Amino acid sequence: MRCSGPRQLSPRNRGAAAGTGVFHAYTVGRYVTGQAATDAGHTEAALLYDARRGVYYARPTLRGWLHLLCFLASLAGGALLLARAHGAAQVTATAVYAVSLSALFGTSALYHRGNWRASWRLRLRHLDQAMIFFLIAGTATPAFLLSAPVGAGLACLVVMWALTLAAVAARLARASTPEFVAGALFIGLGCTGGLALPWVWIHAGTVSGILLLAGGLLYIAGALFYHRRWPDPYPSVFGYHEAFHIYVCVAAACQYAAIARLTG
Image (cartoon, rainbow, N blue to C red; front, side, top):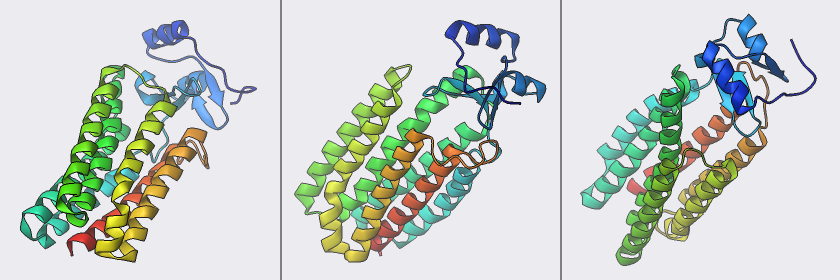
């Protein structure tokens, strides 16, 4: 069931299709949308929309499962970090990081695994993206607080969290944000957190510095590949979004290891 290239739905057609509860038929590569989705028994709630390409597609089988597993792992990992932390600074920094890590993976799993109505899907998408900002700042918190000189570290954290809250507020205030704008904000905020890298390198050693840097580079690479929608090996099961989630999980693991060395 293929057609010659992707066909986009106009807002009017989307509304008409949504009113029937079933979208009319389009196929894009190996993505199943529209009439093909109708034939397969998909309804509006089962279809996802790619705003960049203007197409609907059936949710891949493995969408969200990787982040669900990482959410469970983050709960155990966060508890382990807190158990090893000593002193107010380590406990505070570790708690902020652990909460932000679990919040990102938990929100992502909730958003990607559920069959949500359009209004709730939009809310959860915004929350999912807001959690990315919070994880960036949450990861920077122990990096600045535990490795930088006290005055400089606190000043950087104030700036970091102020930028984070401003970015989250701006994101939640808009119904939609161009993907490249959101990506630029993520990368820009991450680079701001990267100012802690020299202090981490000096305080915790070369391995910690390399792990922190590797995690940042993996996040950036994942964002760039996500924007290109590549790689997209098996869209009905494991597509470009799942590939992006692998980058996120590996990047988070690298930076978790770096922070564990800071608090060890």
